[in-house]
Length: 105
Figure 1 (cartoon, rainbow, N blue to C red):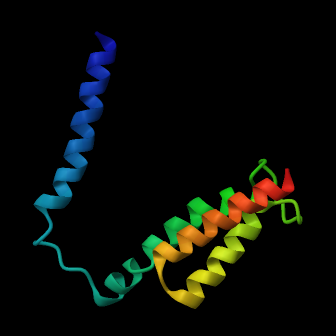
Figure 2 (cartoon, rainbow, N blue to C red):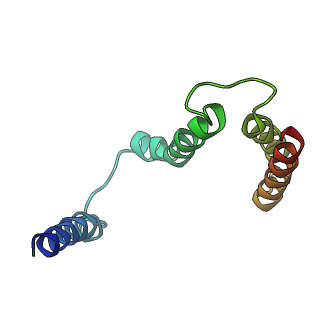
């Protein structure tokens, strides 16, 4: 019974928070500087997710030659800047990672 109440409470809170954003969507006007700042949120969040995975695969900072995550990320970043195409960047990064992982084993 406690688990059911807990799940129902979490669903209510989650729905309430998300519904408030939709209910207030057309009524709130943000300043121009705030709108421009919001454009940086996705890259910052993605960097915060990716950086620890790439730089600390074993739980400590590893910038050695034996870190395939780091080298594959560098190759993917280079291809991303060069080609400006998301699918190409993902495929090249994954192929590079798999090859490096296979070579370094």
